Length: 213
Image 1 (cartoon, one colour):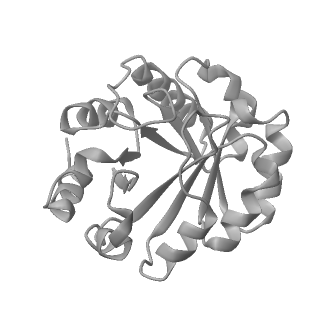
Image 2: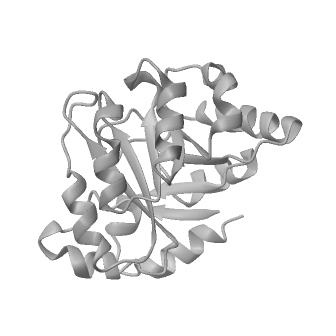
Image 3: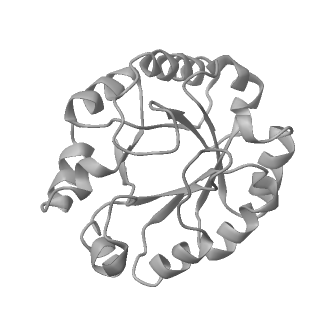
């Protein structure tokens, strides 16, 4: 699997060295929260610009914000390679998918734990990635919700049956035990936050997650 570290728990006073400490990760995950769609507030597109100066990684940008159609271009211009928005945050997912694609980046969609994965069925052919939240979005350090595995398996079966090309990503409560479970369910990308940034040997952990079985 691809390991996409989320640096919410890093020391933002030394952001450059923190990003360098995970420079062997192929992807970097940006958790953008507006304090409205979710209760917490994080950084904005200016942080992407700062990180872009010290990183050539794939920028995996997860917008946990209301009205993402108003703001996604700010993140594209700041350096995002993939924009993932929430199904629950917009009234017209189809139009937003087309708009993001037309801006020249990849597009993903995410659903909260309580949202039935089947609501995405008609969107699957158009998506580059689907992000399954395995915790309630808005804060780190929560426990993995195990029925997320059912959603991953559902999407993987759809992908195989119809020949879709989207990646499946999971975010929340990922450690080596849960990483093995999502891998077996058909997952492609794992977002790992505090489990990596609370340790010193971060690049070693990234490699271990990439090769977990």
